[in-house]
Image 1 (tube, rainbow, N blue to C red):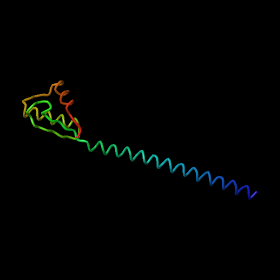
Image 2 (image 1 turned 120 degrees about the vertical axis):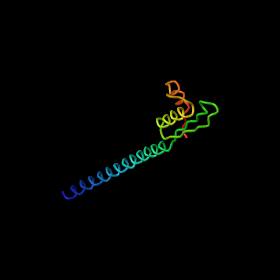
Image 3 (image 1 turned 180 degrees about the vertical axis):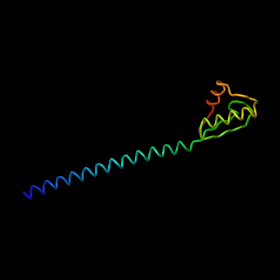
Image 4 (image 1 turned 45 degrees about the vertical axis):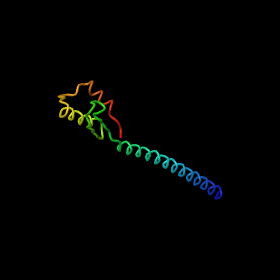
Length: 104
């Protein structure tokens, strides 16, 4: 009887150890996935949006940089008002501006 209990306990401990090892490998794999996702977000956060007015208006050397397209569009609208006399940015012009925005 004692031998049977010992064998049963040994089998249980072995299965428990294997289960723990599997769980550790799964956790390591999940950690790798999470680290990759974090690196991707960090990379995307480092990208700067750039707009060169000369891509739209020849002869204008204005360059705007921003972290987002929305922020860049605000800068472009302000520049258009101040330097090109545009009181508002019509939708077709906004589309042209957006088409010229580049990542840096």
